[in-house]
Length: 432
Image (cartoon, rainbow, N blue to C red; front, top):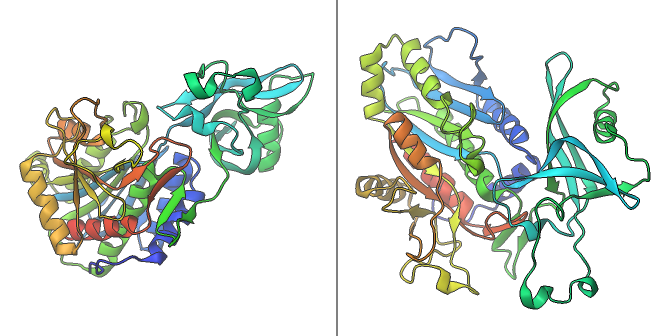
């Protein structure tokens, strides 16, 4: 089933559409679910009893989705093949009392989510998106995808040392965006505007999870259009590739030796400790209920988990041409060089030697080259959902991903070949 090693413009075009349509984790899981529905998956509610029938199923919870495909003939102890990813990205999120202003400017009070490159949010046209909770308890997605907000940088005439001493931003004072002018800012103005945008009655919204996003669309970049610039590649690039791979294996074969799974979590960027994060119970609950729905008992659950492998797919650092000394001198991943295997002996990544062998066999089967990533010993290493998944569930986990530049910027950069190469490798992995 795996496609040959070549650049698939169609896959990358589709990734760009997915990025543009997913300005929040809630939009990302809704779009993922829609794609899986087209592949024959159906949603199951956590409050309902589950059956053990074959086919594709998925669970939605907030900004997370877990989807799995049970092939014909699967036993209660059939192991899983999991691709894990996350739906959230660092950004600016609206506070509970959002309306503020000063000196005639109308502003929105925001809190910093995760670890964004703060300067990348300056002087950029921003929209507003997320989830609204209504008075009756239902939810509604909202996406104001037009220039609405802007965080203006201080003019150089008022900050003469900015180019010599560096830009210094106070998260509380300097990141509050403007969205108009008024000498009479009133509490409720922003939410009233959002209600009007959605065609809702005044006072119908009682809760919100709203965030700013760049409205500049993803685009090909470079002389030969061999690069892609866009928002939220960390980590919707992996969510998109995993969704495409799961749909492919579910429609292409009934003789899978494993149960393929997509687990796309929220809140990775702030520690994963939530009911929709990788450190929460969602994945374990879904896997266990799948075992028990097929007539299994705890012994079957233990056998299935013991044979399970998870690929934690997240972006990593491509070598930066202007800062090559920040990278390990013998590990310089390049964009369009294929996905990367991420290693850290202090378990910031979950990969070990046996996991490397699984990944090498996967890429060999897919005909996809891969590269190795390890951090410079003098630089702190980031982490992923990989170690959390391994520790929480006792599942062998391997950290992989795609090398990018400008990680955690409002607009990141990857190679145009790599998303397709990652998807091909994930197909081979899920096929077993």
